Amino acid sequence: QVQLVEAGGGLVQAGGSLRLSCSASRNIFTFDSMSWFRQPPGKERESVAQITNSNRPKYADAVKGRFVISRNNTANTVYLQMNNLSPEDTAVYYCNVDGRTLYGGDFWGQGTQVTVSS
Image (cartoon, rainbow, N blue to C red):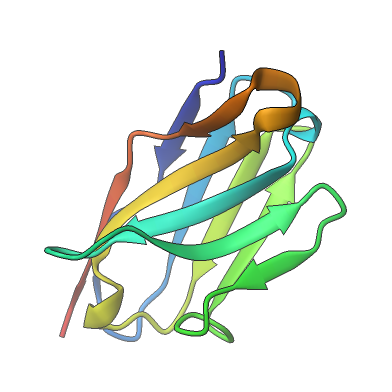
């Protein structure tokens, strides 16, 4: 029902920046919220940032002040600007949308690898 396509991952040196994007196949106003999660090697998936339809962002403590989540409603895309990256940010990053109201569940992208070298 909802397809999500992520882009923007890659290899970057510590202190560098990357911007991830997640394009949705539906109007993003039909979702309750959009989020980014990540799964570091050997660890469980964790929440990174979330943005609601009222454009209110929330961040995990580990990324506050370094990452910025934003949305382009016209392009049906959510972004994650990641600055001052450290090796601890190395993970597969996943886009998630909460579509419980209209679609009966939440949906995940395929994931994009972010690797930060020291």
